[in-house]
Structure formats: structure tokens, C-alpha cells
Amino acid sequence: MTYLELVNDVLVRLREATVSTVSETSYSTLIGKFVNDAKRQIEDAFAWNVLGTTITLSTTSGTYSYALTGAGQKFQVLDVLNVTSNLRMKNIDFATMNRYQNFSTPVNGIPAYYAFDGIDGSYDTKVTIYPRPDGVYSIPFSLTVPQATLSSDATIISVPDVLVAQNAYARALVERGEDGGLSSSEAYLLYKSMLSDYIALEGTRYPENQEFVAI
Image 1 (cartoon, one colour):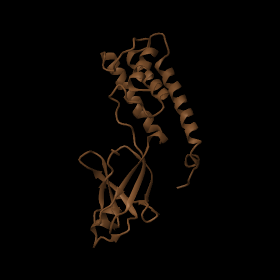
Image 2 (cartoon, one colour; image 1 turned 180 degrees about the vertical axis):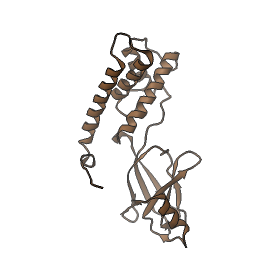
Image 3 (cartoon, one colour; image 1 turned 120 degrees about the vertical axis):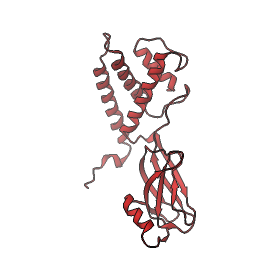
Image 4 (cartoon, one colour; image 1 turned 90 degrees about the vertical axis):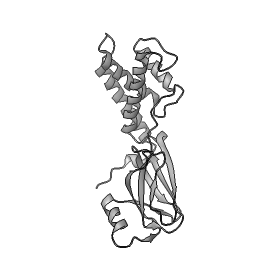
């Protein structure tokens, strides 16, 4: 569904008139806010395959800090590789990385470690790698990155639209109060059941979601 279609879906559930654009009325604008709130909550609930993306760093000799352009700050890391050297990059804590980079003389060589360290001017997360690269290396970051906030009527939502519609509907019922139809608590319980089913179904396709590892 598009952003507009989702807003109209919720309006119909509320027995309200549909609109031709999300910002047509103050109420449809409010429903649009609920749709975006619902989208964010659902994105946070699971590492949805549809949100998967790969951001590849191409290193420059001696440069050890890079921005993950387009990743923002709210993402999940699935895997990080140094494909040039055929090795998996290991995530280490900030303090350890800080000592590697500042104690004695930093080593130049094949990057094998990474740590996240702040953001750039575009509010994208920056990553520091070590050893400092001694040449050009290709380092793809496999991530799940939330979709940008919906603003255009024609934008198609990435996560399951039925979940977004049900969640936004429950939020709208809370705001409006009971009116003889489905209660907000009932609507939210239905959403939670639907979310659980969707996560369980998607989880069957990925073995890593079916394993419990002792730590």
C-alpha cells in the first residue's frame, strides 16, 4: 500500500470519509502521523528482510574513519566482511578501538576490526576500522535500515501494510475514545497477534532466527 492508501484504510475503519491527499484535513493528517508511528514500531520489532540493504565501504590507504552513508543511526548489523581479504570483520567495543588508534603507533595493514564512533554531518553513523588500511579494501556492511518517514502520498511502505494499518487504527481509537465499535485495547491485542504471526512466518525462512546461542 501507498502512504495515502494506508491513511484511507484507517479512515474507512473509523467510518470516516476518505481523502485524496494525506494532508487534506486535519484528521487525515493526524492519521498520517499514526501511520508513521505504527511503521516505526513495526520496524523496531524485527529485522525484516525487506529492510535489508548493503552499504559498501571502499577504503583509502591510511584513512580509518568512514560514514555509513544512508544508514542513519537506527539500524541493525547482520554481517560485515572484508571481501578483498576474504575475512569477517569483528565488532569490538569503542574503548578497545580507541586504544588501538591512540596508543603507540597504529598499525597499517588488512582491516579486521570495526567499531561505531559518532555521526557525520548528515547524521549517518561513522565507523572506525583497524588495522588502518594499507590500500583499497571493499568492506560491505549488511544491515537492516528503517524506511524514511512517509511524507509523499505515493510512497509505498516496506514493512507489512496490514500490520501498519491495524496498529494505526488502534492508535486512532485511543485518541478518539470508544464509540461503540472495537475498543482500542481489543484492536491493539489483535495487532499484537498479527505481528506475532508475521514474525513467526518470516522467521521460518532464516535459520539464524531459529537458533538459540548460549552466551
